[in-house]
Length: 196
Image (cartoon, rainbow, N blue to C red; front, side):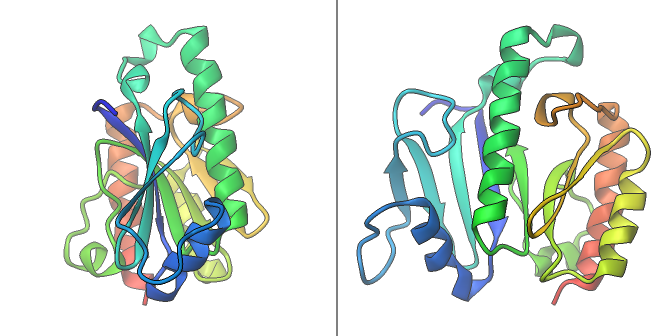
């Protein structure tokens, strides 16, 4: 695969890595999980197999993301169509696995709770999912309020999906890039203080 990469990153906790992988990949080998698995149509943006990376407390689904590295003014019907596929696949996975939170990211890592507590600046919370089973309702309400008007907010099977990028939501709701970064920072502060 070629950079820049588009990632679906999910923080699942230590006990959640194997169940998440097993929900996404058929016939996972027993024993220690490999650090990388290549799976056809994992996200569904490229013809060759896409990568699933396992970490101690998270999983990352990775594909090529260069098509999304354009300005808002350069967005084409193809970008919108593929963005819709990214949105649909991301929320489908969030509905199928047990995660605490997750995000759609391009060339940026998803911070774990301890890093969010130490460093409040984060670009991870612009197109993301929060689990209602893992994050209290008051915190989720605060996050939705911080995402603000203009953001796309959707209740899902196990939580809420919030999007500030027009390509990654069906209504093409959009928050200007610098403003979405500021909102992401504020959301990271709230989540860092609320997550165990």
